[in-house]
Structure formats: structure tokens, C-alpha cells
Length: 403
Ligand SMILES: Cc1ncc(COP(=O)(O)O)c(C=O)c1O
Image (tube, rainbow, N blue to C red; front, side):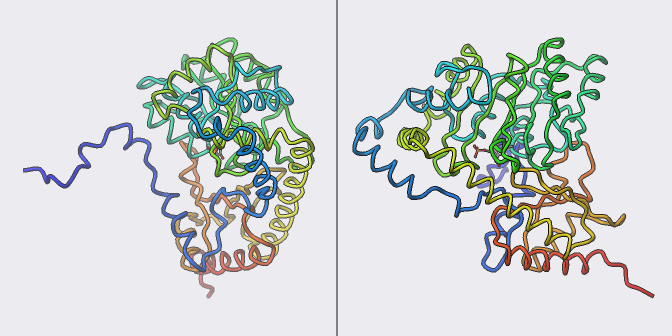
């Protein structure tokens, strides 16, 4: 007799395929009192524009109070779509509201794209390593992943071309072209052109997931892949540049595609939350708000990244890394040949610091000696403590006893 309380056999393949406990467990432990976290991708709470949000909430309630509390169209609130189109146009092709679908975070954008395009065993090519949320989403949708190696210039498009020339056909190529999560890579101009050329020749869509482009420490906003190719679905998260709590993001694509994706969204959640969209549109439309806010963020994270690089060089000389050029992460390698980042991550938690081992981000590549560290959340003093604790954990797990 099956146990009537055990419903696990009833769980769909889709849900099982997408599950990953590795990072969830670490993030849960990272929230414990006394643990310093280098693990999460959470933006620093002190960067949230709380006063500007308060004013935007007040203005929203005074001027559009009823509409802001009502249902809204699936595609998004008109003002928010226009605002997103304007923002997208600054770094991409000219865009109108018809090209924009407002989603509940870019994570929902990914989910809608996977649901709308991927059938069982369709191929999705992506950087290896890649953003775990995307790996899980495409896996859950039944995709076969085609991992493409990457370096500091992003996806190695020569390898992609060789696979395509050998007969592999992919529907989507997923890239995080700016300050990649987890590697920090920037897709080089030559590889962008190459990718666009391959998309023309082989007829795949490019999914450009771009939450970090505005966090360039040199202040240069690199253009969207849209300028190189028409078949781009662009995911514009606001989580790292405003705050994640509203769950308001924009998906920008050719209008026929946004209409298809809006159809899929309708039966997912009807719409993204109306009030959040009104407030975010009000905030982004506030004269003189966005440019100084972004400049402040860049300088805040640049300082943190520089400080973190100094702290790591001083306290954890056994870690190899490249100084970040933007975004929130450092992708580190453990120098010792016997190193094992999963073992280190467990020992680190015992020593009171949370870090994420590399393996869960890796599809085919070897993440055993890799660690993703985030400098976003800790002050200089706490960074020093965290790196000191990591060094203790390393000594416990990897130092070979002398003599
Ligand atoms: C590459 C990438 N895409 C998407 C997301 C999720 O963004 P959102 O909060 O808009 O769902 C993240 C969050 O860490 C990310 O790093």
C-alpha cells in the first residue's frame, strides 16, 4: 500500500528537474544569527532609495490611488511600460511600450520564455558556468542544455559555432553579457557580433539577461545585444539597481513576441502587481532621480569591490581571483590542487561565514575548485572578519600537516 501521506511520487518531472537544494541550504544557514554572508546575491540594503520610494508612494496614492489599487493589463501598467521602453532605448534599439512586457522580476521573464519556446529535449545553449536560476528554469522546462565554455570575455562563440556546424540545433542562446553571475565576465564586442551572426545563420533567439549592466565601475553602460541583432529577448531586472522587493522588471522583445509571452503570463499570474508598477514608474519618472542614484550605486559597489579585493589578497592568499569590473560577485579559484570548494563551504559555515561553492553553477565544467563570493552586503570591517573566518575554515580543511 502506498503511504497516503507521501505525495512525493505525485510531484511532476518538471518540478523535480528544476529543484536544487545546494544553494538554498547555504542561504538558509547564511541567515542564522552570527553568520557573515558572502553567499547571497542580495543588493546592499543601504542602497535602497527609501526616501524617494516614500515620496513616490505618497504621490501614487494622491494622484493615481484608485488605478494603482485596481487590476491592470497583463502586459503592464501603461506608464510603467513607457518608462521601461524609454530606459531600454537608452542602451538598445528604439523601443515602444508595445515591445515591453512587465514581469514579476526577470526570473518570471525567464520562466515565461522557457514555457513559451521549450519543448521536451529542445536545446538551450548557455555559458558554463551560468546563473543558477536560469539553469533550473530551462531544465524544469525539459530543455537539453548545451554548455558553452566561457572566459573573461564571455561565451566562447567559436565553440558554439563548432557545435552548430556539427549539426546541433538550439532554439535559444542564454547570455548574461555584462558582469556575469557568477563569473563577472563581459561579452566582448567581437563575440557579440559573432553571436548575432550565428543567430542569423542558425535561426535561434538570444535571451539577454542583464541585471548588472548599470553597475559598471568605470561608469560605461555597454549597449544591449539588441543593437547587434533583431531576435533578442531582453530581460531588464530592476532588482539590483532599485530594489528587489517590488518584483517589477521589464522584458523587451519584438512586439509579436511580447504578445505571445503576455498570453503565457495571463494564465500564470494575470499581471505583475499594480501598485508596485505605479510606484516604480513614478520613481523612475522623478526628474533628477535615476542618474545620480545609479552613479551613487556604482561608487558604493566600486568601493566595496576594491576593499574586498584588498581584504582577500591580505587574508586569503590561497584564493585566485580577478578584481571585479562591475556587478556584485568575485569568481574565485582555490589554488591548491587538492582543494574542494564544497568541503570548504561546509567548514566555512561552521566557522561563521557563508560562501557558495562553484559546482551548482556549472553544467559540464568543473566547479570543484571554484567559489562565488559577493561583496555586496558587508561593510569593510565585516568583510575582514568574514575573510578571516574563511581562512580558518581553509586551514581546517586544506592545509596539509607539516613534517
Ligand atoms: C543573472 C540574473 N538573472 C536574473 C536574476 C533575478 O532577477 P529578478 O530579481 O529581477 O527576478 C538574477 C538575480 O540574482 C540574476 O543574477
